[in-house]
Each structure stands twice: as C-alpha cells, then as structure tokens.
Image 1: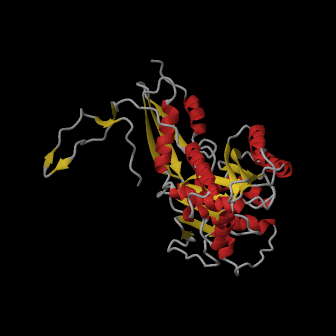
Image 2 (image 1 turned 180 degrees about the horizontal axis):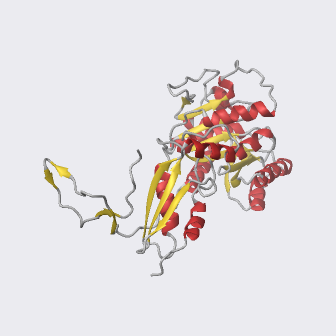
Image 3 (image 1 turned 60 degrees about the horizontal axis):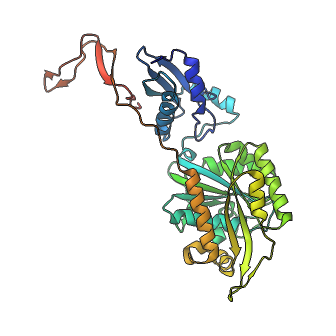
Length: 405
C-alpha cells in the first residue's frame, strides 16, 4: 500500500470539511492546527474549535475522518481538538469581517432552505407554513424564520399573533412554537399588523440577530420565508448562509415563471444551490370534479427543466388552503386528505429525500498503534499497578480522540 507522505494533499482533502455555522472550509478558516502522518499510514489531524463547548465537535470528527480516509494509503485517521486562543479568535473575526464568533447555536441546524418567489402573490408564505408542518408531521424537527420583514405573515398563519418571545438565561431569544414548529418573526417585536419601515442596514442587523441570537436548538430543517424580489434580504441571507438551499415557488403562467427565473438567477449569482421548483395554484377542481387551469399549465415544469432541478410538487388551488392560512392552523394538519395537502406532503418528502446524508464508508477494524508515553505508565488501582506497556510507550486504539478539556 502506497503511503501518504504529503500533508498538502491531506490539507486539500480537508477543504471539503465545512464549518456548519461559519459556512466556510476549515482550511480557509485556518482551523486545521496540525497534520501528522505516521509510517503505518495513520494520520493525526488537530482541529481548533471556536468554543470549548462547541456542539459540532462530532460533525468535525466524522467529516475530517471521512475526507482523509478517502485518500490512498491512509490506514486510519485520528481527530484531535483544541480551542482557538484570544489572538487566534481576533484574527478569525477580522478574516470574516464580523465582531464576534458564533457559539454553535445555528450549527445545530442540519438543513437550511430559503423559500423564494421573485414576485409576490404566488402563495410562498402559505407553502412555507404548510411545508414546515408537513416536515414536522414526518417526525422532523423544524423551524421557520419569517424573513419577509415587510410582509410578515407566518405568525398569523400559526395562530401566534404578536406574542413576545422569551429570553433564556444565556440571553438567547427563544422561538415560539406552534403545531410542532419553532417560529421566529419580526411580527413578534412590533405591534400586531404594524408596518415595518426599514432600510437595508437595519434589515441586515435584524436578520443577523435572528440567525445568531436565537436559540433554535437542534433542527433537521430551518425554512426561511424570503420576501419577494432579489433585494437586501436575499443578499444578506446568502452572505450569512452560503450553504443554504433555495426553493423557488411559481404559478403556472409564463409571466410568473419569468419573474421566478430572475430569482433563480439571483441565487446563482450569490452561489446558493437551487434544490427545486414548487408550482402553486396549478389548477382548481370544482366540487363536481370539473378542473380549470385558471393560471395556465406547465410553467413550473418548464422552469424546473430550464434550471435542471426537480419539480418538487404541483399544489392545486383549494378553498381550505386559504381558509386555514387565515385561521392559524396549517391545512396539512387539519385536512391531510385535501388535494393541496397531499401535494405539499409530497414536496416535503422530496425535501427529506434530498437532505438524507450519504452513507459513511465502512472503516476497517481499529488497529493498535505505538505512541510515546511518559514515565510510570500504568494505572493505579487500589494500591496495585496495572500491567504496563513496554518502557517509554503506551498502547491506544487508532481513531481515539482526546476528550475536550
């Protein structure tokens, strides 16, 4: 077996390991503290964390081991951790252009999905509210960030009104919860139905706080309801969440489809991946069974084909979908058999399938390797000394990580 002897090759492989909260490679962030290669192909990698209690330590352990073990000649990978000192943290803050480093709150969110439309009036917020409820119904931990600051409507759709969220002992905002979904919106901090008249800098500050100062906890999916258009909010979220996915909502008619195409172009320009298209208001069926294509037909599929992404669902017009949005309970909860509910649940299952992690490669049985040991190796047990390794060495299984201090 050819041995890996070039640490640069390992460093290149580690570029695939992304900090889930800072949203950049650990190599780019200078978080790879050291790389050591043993003669038997065992590689030791030390990663510096931003905080001692970092909840994504396990993510780094798995991702680093997976990236390095894929290289030819690597028999096993040991992952060790230390913590950035104040000077290193200051350098990282300067590199990122931010005044503070996150403490792992958003890092516990597995998948972030921005739901955008390019134009208003296509039912984007209604779909976001019902998609979140459908995901929760599939057993997923879900949150919604209502980033449509000027046209916030998620609080009403979840029956939350303008209730003020509590603050934890750690001075984190706790999202409100309804129907199994955690919700955060600017509507919780202003008088009910009050107009929000803000310019770009205030929007940027508010969205940054919603992402970094809200204790979302562990979530499988965080859905972000974007405002229409391609302005400040979308660009801010792209900057803060470069690893987020983007779902485009459109109605079937060509005019809406072309405007949605501009939203897709914006996503490409800010390097957000488009995961799929959802066609809303795809048709109306009368109680007698007659179907009318009020807004035309095929626009969603045409846009999906143009963008080379899947069409996640075609949601028909139904009166209960509108009624439940105004009533504060998502339709998928109250009437799961409604045609719109079935289409939304189908789209939710598609999102779950796309978010499913690839299976990790099987690793060989952990070998024992010789590492230097200090004098007096051997554990004390009631005055008796346990058998020790040969002088100057101790044995430990490869792949074992040092505990965090």
